[in-house]
Length: 108
Image (cartoon, rainbow, N blue to C red; front, side):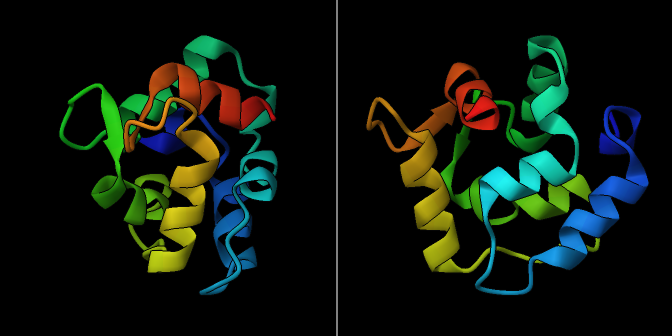
């Protein structure tokens, strides 16, 4: 499933353009792409796109490429951004993000 079937392509492009390397802010990003206003089911669809290996979790390695899940030309997150994103989302401390953790992070 393409991310643009869930979110507005123009919003995705604007959000990707807004965060140069080292400046990623997941809260602002989710707001800019319109994810904060989506239902749990729509947020879950986004999660499933980002869960590249279909493990039921977004692991640190997948998180690094999260912006590419929104658009093929999205940049990789820096190691620092990846770790900060994981820390913000991983509420149970298992080193990965489940769908409920992801949905909670989106709605923060």
